[in-house]
Amino acid sequence: MSKIWSETYKVHTYELDRQQKVSIRGICSFLIDTAGEHVHELGYTIPQLLEQNRSWFFSRFLIRMQEYPGWQEKITVETWPSGSRKLLYLRDWRLFSGQQLIGQATSGWLMIDMLKRRPLRPESYPEWGTFIHPERTIPHVFGKLPELDHDLDPSGQQEFTVRFGDVDINGHANYLKHIEWVLESIPPEVRVEEEIAEMEIHFLSEANFGEEIITRSLRNGETDIFPVSNSPVSSPKGTEYHHSLVRRQDGVEVARARTVWRTVT
Image 1 (tube, rainbow, N blue to C red):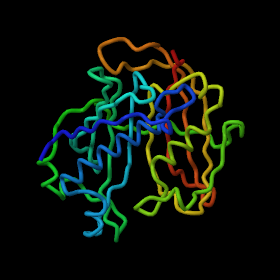
Image 2: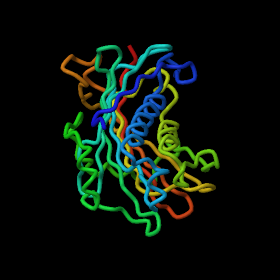
Image 3: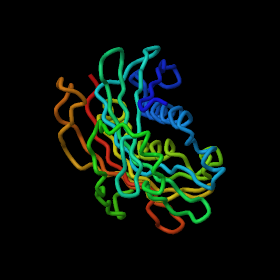
Image 4: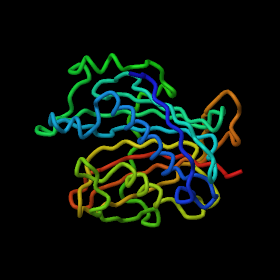
């Protein structure tokens, strides 16, 4: 079994954004697909785990992108389990366009007992340690993200209802929908003229079919953009936004996020 898994993807027209580059949603789908292929080889896919009343829940995610390839360009993604931290099973990625490193990501996953709906500690599964390649592309500890004031100006707010097509194999809205909801609360002019240099999202609670989700965003000001490689990024500064997704029915925060945007060059 390979500790590092690699897949190559061609950018399709339906994965392009307004700048005619692969969208952040497209990039994230490549990452999860690669991880899925790897855990299939390891014997830890969600269908395999559900036979034992266990499943993976996405909990923490951080991505940094230096470039976004365009139509028909190829992106190679490498991924591996990189360790654990408290209840989190860690997984990292690298993205290449040809030989050029264009992005890095890291994540934390929970192994959930589906009967008790409780997380299972990594040390409960010592066999998982045999798959680990202890390299972190981003040595991030996933500290708590800033809390938003829920009395924000409604101009930074959108509302969504979880549709049946938004629900994944675990019975709740999938992580790509959370990312879409976050992005929809960003002003359109920002999304047309800028691109994501960095995005971090913490999934805090499940969003289920029929529930109403309120997403709020707040511009936090200028911040540094972390380089993906030793070469300088196109812009040393970016604009940071903080985000919160709240379930209307009970006021529970479903997700919290942070994005950093830079001017498209």
